[in-house]
Length: 80
View 1 (cartoon, rainbow, N blue to C red):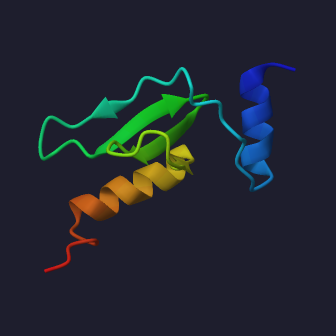
View 2: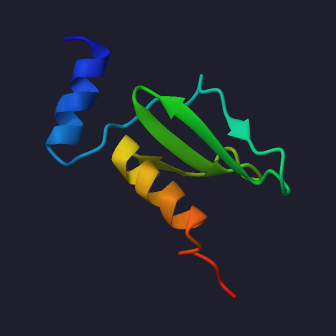
């Protein structure tokens, strides 16, 4: 079974795979301090604290990531 197929069947079942993030290419924004990093791995989006690269990463499906980004653009997470 192909690697992408495994991820798709797990996502359809409502669970997320344990992704191997050791070879992930982590990206930081050029705005702000760059503490939040993201990586695109096997059809998922991983997000971590760049100050603690050995710490945990949050894993998002593409739909979850889209909802997060749209919410951030709409000010849903503004603390003021």
